[in-house]
Length: 332
Image 1 (cartoon, helix red, strand yellow):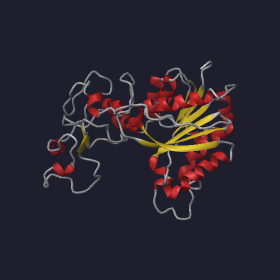
Image 2 (cartoon, rainbow, N blue to C red):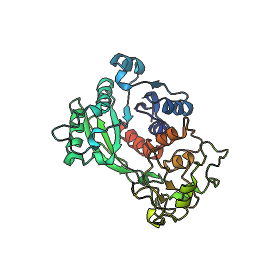
Image 3 (cartoon, helix red, strand yellow):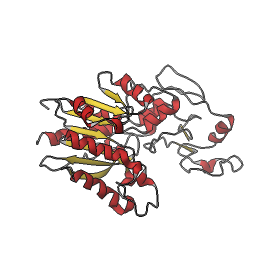
Image 4 (cartoon, rainbow, N blue to C red):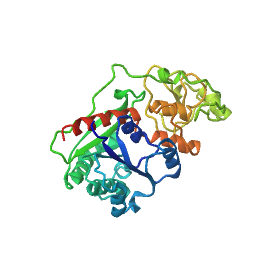
């Protein structure tokens, strides 16, 4: 790259997407997020970035133009939260018209105003086939109407050196006359949970360490009793019937499988247990499963920190996406 490519990060959260693009030599023009604790983490780890702590719906066109000033934006990145598509039975209502998806419309508004050469939009994988593919087509059509060629694909973070199976739909658009490319598998073997977490000192329930964010949750005696029956990679069925939770998510009360990549990290992992220690994973360990470096510090309450980690685009996955943007930029 002769000159640094410039990006804007919408719905930046704690900064997983930004970190991946920074690591590949991109320059941040500005980022925006509404959550105060998420912003606190972002500011701490990206002190030189221009972060706007604000509801994007209240960010005017003139403010956006001022924030980018004379910069030519190469790429707009972000994962707008979209709730409407995930609800069954939206008969007669299109994704685009659902008020719960106004943040997607805000992403389109910024792209239309800024006119980046490329954009990258990330979301949960189930969006891809929602409503027999109509939701995906609606999204693509919205971008086509503002002059962008768009393609989308489901990517798995484990293919890019992230020790976690996390499938996400990635939309890449361009207003340049060229083919869109997506990152391809860069690893021969998936990283396992044990490979990346064994470096951390063991902790008991409620114990703290000097490592940032490596603080064990304080579990109740009842919870500790339940988890001691679950073996490496095991599930709730191993808990004696009289102790076993009678209902609930089958993805809970399980142990991580030490010799495989992690299950998808979400904002609440309190009832998924360490592969050999009787406790849930710490924020530090969850961040490691998302491919955050150990010196990336999360701020705010423990619940907020877990949400920040769970909502992130894994930095290693973001790096792989940044690399294809660089390749496409070389042909512009």
